[in-house]
Length: 479
Image 1 (tube, helix red, strand yellow):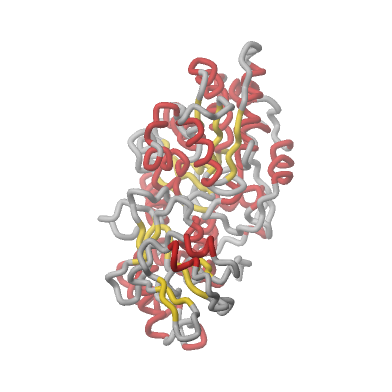
Image 2: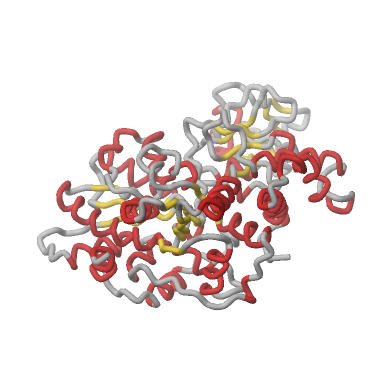
């Protein structure tokens, strides 16, 4: 067993690995109904009330592993049957309530939702409460707390609520607000929220390339890969990807070099800009602060930029992006990126693919991954893009532009910076938006989620053969 952060993550992996194994052997359609029994063979394997419910939930996980609900445009979906263990969110009166005479909580409640028992202890009527929080603010004993479900607490854009018309109150995702960052996916302790998988699309692309030899499949990997497969060396991971059937492996960091160079030019031209590298950040602007859309850089993301370059130079190329980002799956469906990204999988899914083909990375030889500069690689952490843009301005000989960048670590910081900018109160002229805390190294699709070490990202960047952005891009121009 590989080391995973939680049992929930390991269960998700087992489903993906089993679905992939059937797909490689062209046996998926005949055996799909057997997968729940393979994943949950007996009572000792279940965390639910009974093994039968666990198997029913696994059936839903299998559907998501096979692409999920096609009528739902959101990459993130809720498995209703699995979402029944969390208490409802909202304000509650705790045992700290002293039944005081002041009754300030009652006075400030706009909906008359607070009443008292014979001991003057407060009680909140959930049918009336609107969760404004005024009662909690005025309680002298801090006896009223706001209880939140893990998914709601994780979602910083207010896209998750409960289906009040359902007796079990499962979580509901508002697609008009959701930015598909996947924060709720990792935080749900029951695995009731998960991302749709394109793992079958990826397998199909590889198998067709092997059968008809008409095209080559390129793996474009995010620089975060350097910290993911900690039980093997990076060179062995590259070898494993190629052994799986990929023609070659290219760094998305090379696309980051291209984006940094072009984004620096665009910033000088316009005077103010927000980054376009993080698809969840761009989605947040489009859905929550649309008045800022015109300020988003017109550059593609690094993954899409390098994919476009590959397809221009190799007409028979198919591109699969591999990274830590669930929102990248949605980006691949957008009109501006769809022509270049044929499929997207996460590092979790890559591990499942390795094991579905019985590829033991620790037994493989070393291959190499050296397509980008230091600055392209440090895009993986918060502040890396800003550093790269500053370097690009320097390499372009721009001396009369004063870069004032704000690197936003997580969507909450992005919100603050964007709101200030929308009101003309932001002092900086460049917003680097990273929806995940820490940057891409905090992405929901990481194999492990505890490593957000900025120094490790910088160390990987320093190992790059090309030390400047110009050097990295010039190699492209010579091809």
